[in-house]
Image 1 (cartoon, chains in turn orange, green):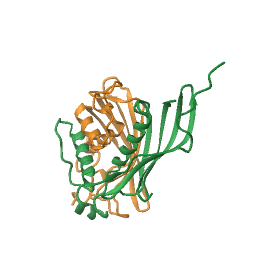
Image 2 (cartoon, chains in turn purple, yellow):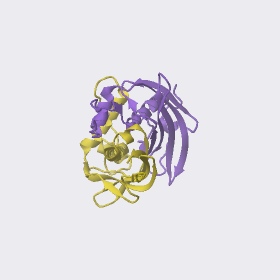
Image 3 (cartoon, one colour):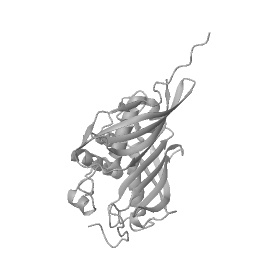
Image 4 (cartoon, chains in turn green, cyan):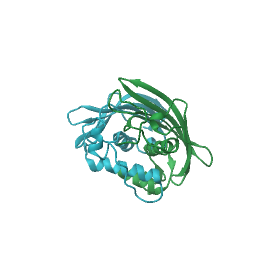
Length: 154
Length: 153
C-alpha cells in the first residue's frame, strides 16, 4: 500500500500503516543495549515486569515509511528533528503491536522542508493504547535542496 | 493531629545532570544497527544501511561536516537520566519531547540534564513539568525539550 515512491513524496493526509509485529524480547534487548539503557525493566529481571522503552517506536517510523514508500528516502538524507511521545502504559515484551498514523505536516522553514507524522502504537489484540507519537524530520539538510525524486540516493 | 503533607522530592529550579558520554562513532553505529535489527525483527542482528550516521563521505555529500549521531541517541540518554531519577513511575507513564537543534558530531562529550519547571503535588504524588536538554562540555545546547512525570514523593 505505497502512497509515494519516496519519503520525500509524502504529503499531508497520507496514511501510514497499519503495520503489525511482535515486540520480541530480542529487539528490546538489542535496542536498549545499543542506547545504554541499563535498567533491568528492559532485560527481564525487574519485579515490575519486562517492557520496551517508548523510544523504540522510532523503528516503527522506519516500518511505516518502508511500507508507504518502497523507494526509500529520496534524493537526500532525512534528518530527524523532533521526537514527541506520550506513553499511557509501558509496552510488555511479546505483545503483538499495531501501529498506524498519517502525515500531519509538510512545511518550509528557513529553506528546509519539514515533514511531520503522527502515529499510535496499540495492542493488536485488545486495542489498548500504549504510545502516542509525533515526529518531525528535515527532508534535506542543505537549504533549498531540490526534493523532487529524480533518482535513487547517490 | 494530621501529618503534614509530604513534599515533592524535587523543587522548582532544581537541576540534575548525567555523567558526560563521548558520542563516538561506535555509539552512532550501535544505534543504526539496533534500529535496523528492530525493524527487521527476525531474531538476527543486522548492520544498518550506509547513511549520515555511519558514512563520512555520504554525510559530507549531504552538507554535513562528517557523520553525526542519530538524534534518538540523545533522546535515549535523556530518557535514561529521567528513568534513573524517577524509576518505575516514569516507566509506567509520562511524556518526552526532544528537538535536535544542533547536529552532534563525532567525539563530542554529551551530557543529558533536566530542570524542574513546575510541581503539582496531589496526595502522595507530584506531577513534574521538566525542561530537558543535552549539552556538550562547553555548555553548547545540542538538544532541547520537555518531559512530564507523575511520581511518588
